[in-house]
Length: 551
Image 1: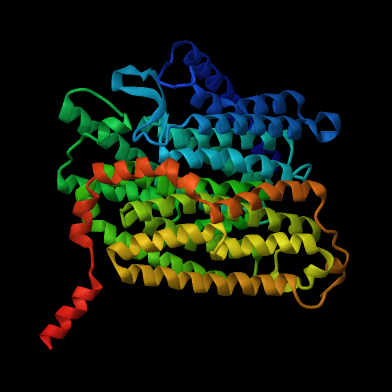
Image 2: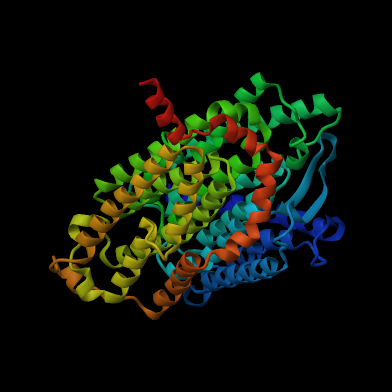
């Protein structure tokens, strides 16, 4: 069965490669680009992982099994380098999409190859490019790192990058679906002993969400055709639509359910712990660090701008679900007995914070939600890498089988503590900045929201520190722990950039906010945030004053 899955997954990857290469070749010659760099830089970033995939296919496991590893790692560094260049050219004072690339794709229905980025997508693209080299280096020469695995990783990276840059809804959906195929095979082939169950559950949830999204996209396109007399699936064009309130309600539900499953927002989260637990380390890093961010990103890009009337009705309930997710995810994480499941449920809590930040719909909340997406990718990705490192030495995820690790792995223990404290939100580290901004944004709408969100920090401190104490401190429990070897130079090198980024964003997040503020301020102004706040703001002081006057 495993060999059948491997052949099928590799065949799909190989089949898609020439199609993407042909599209890229056509784009290079005929693309309409507004890029200030003079070439289609976004297309280069999206399709640069093809270099690694092609060399992984051609070289396979030659040269002692290192050829595919080296090919994908070098390709990931190339993508990161181009993204760094993109960051230097980004105009932080401009509200709107930059580096736009557009060419006809399916003219009959107004579907285009249409790319662009703004302050919302910029750092999500950056963190996608930043995480992959560390993840590849962490799993160097492990059992799952065959050339077929490398092809799946590169295809996954293309889907992630494309989703964050697509400005045509059908192109977005294409990249959105492309991600699911390699992740399905990564878990199904290279996952743990219960991988088939986890893969099936992942498939059912995500396909249901994808079908809802597709139906909603097609119907919105039909509404645009009825309103303007021609077809367009361009997301910026759709912002001109004035959709009847009753129709908005149904479309809001369709889009929100699709993105809530992807996030995943409580109560649509149950596929996530199983997928994380059974996935290989690199799959867990990509899933937690990047794929989950497409849920909140889709809400920002589609839901709030397209359905303002429905937002007025449903957004308070979605804030409640986000707050429930914060508390529920933390409480369930507290009783977990396996490392990866504990971190997976912590992700449910963190995604609750992000959803609250988005739906309070002010600059503080949105900025907090956006930086928390980046923070969660860095910190949770690093925690999964740490768990992968110790699991590779002990071959167990049972917390009860650890204890006394600090005596044999002091460097690992220091890194693990650092990222655990960042996950809690310790002041001076990046998690604190995101959570504080979200609470400030929530307090502007309703101070009770901020208080409930703050209680999640206490719960997070309990489950993370209790887990750390049981794994790291105490007497050495068994010979496996007694014989552990500390981190290798390679493992230290790959964790250092993540640690430095975590510290820099915690101490000096201003460069991040400078590049997103213009986008977020224009966003809330264009989509009537003031009207939303006037309708939903809860003034606690006025409430108590009114209560006293009645007495």
